[in-house]
Amino acid sequence: VIDLLVAGGGPAGLATAINAAMAGLDVVVVERRPGPIDKACGEGLMPGAVRALGELGVPVDGHPLDGIRYVDGRHRVQAAFRCGQGLGVRRTALHGALSRRAAELGIPVVEGVVDEVRQDARTVTAAGLTARYLAAADGLHSRVRRRSGLHRPPGARREARYGLRRHFAVPPWTGHVEVHWSARAEAYVTPIGPGLIGVALLTADRAPFSEQLAAFPSLACRLHGRAVTPVRGAGPMRQRTTSAVAGRVLLVGDAAGYVDALTGEGITVALTCAPHLVRCVRDDRPQAYAHAWRRASRTYRLITTSLLWLRGHPCVAPLIVPTAARFPSVFGAVVNRLA
Ligand SMILES: Cc1cc2nc3c(=O)[nH]c(=O)nc-3n(C[C@H](O)[C@H](O)[C@H](O)COP(=O)(O)OP(=O)(O)OC[C@H]3O[C@@H](n4cnc5c(N)ncnc54)[C@H](O)[C@@H]3O)c2cc1C
Image (cartoon, rainbow, N blue to C red):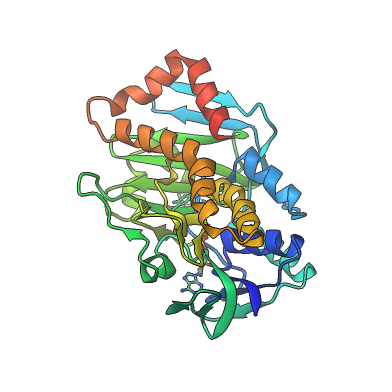
């Protein structure tokens, strides 16, 4: 019997598997798509994520990120990371780096879909494989989360938000991740390479990328005619869970719940929670993971939920950037809390 079966070979799944192999566990990953896997993502790795990848022995190439800048047309504020650099990294490059490390550790990555999950007192079976535990890292719309009864429907009070991402052959004009704010959307600009930037639009409006980009005239002007990848989308972003654990099934990454991409934290949270999951599996204490996950993801959930709440109020939202510009040390403290 395998120690740990991992459903999904995205950053959360591969990081969990690498942690498990490094802890001496026998681990297998089941991933439904062939690599290199791309995804709608802002592609900004916070310093915490860069550090976690280093600890896993995963070298990644990317564009150094110095901090975060907010812009709204009239105001601008930026904060430098104080605890190391972030990295702008193409998702395909991140997947390649994690896959190479997994291969180096001899972790089998099997192509397949995890659908039905069965568990008894000692084992869990999915995709024809039996293991002591299953780590569900199958993303935002996790099937395993639903199958295990851990999915909590979204509250009716919040508008669903979506993300759209596209790359442009434009040299980065800053080492900061630049977040442009408009009345209904945010545009995240991440430097990815010497001649490449990624733009992620986050919004509750369901309209094409080009239409949404028009809400940011100066950015649209800079990017005009320079798109080099098709648009990729994801959402609704907000996904809730009742717990991160159901018996021998443990959720990690977006599968464990997601608030919003507004703070660009998803990969950091996934990489931070993965070692907790592995420790709980190794110690045969799956229930301890529910608490560990809550603790490890708390700051992200709190800050993102608060920012999203402010964003959702038409009288308050226009004050976010001017207020951050007025109190740059508070802005810096929040950025560094997340970083
Ligand atoms: C628009 C947008 C911008 C973002 N920007 C950032 C950012 O700048 N920085 C950041 O850190 N985070 C960002 N995020 C969040 C980040 O993309 C996610 O948190 C991260 O991808 C989570 O990794 P994961 O492995 O949990 O899920 P995923 O990356 O979605 O991987 C899940 C994997 O599971 C596989 N899978 C799914 N179902 C099954 C199944 N049934 N069986 C087998 N395999 C399956 C999928 O093919 C996929 O490979 C952003 C998100 C969005 C939507």
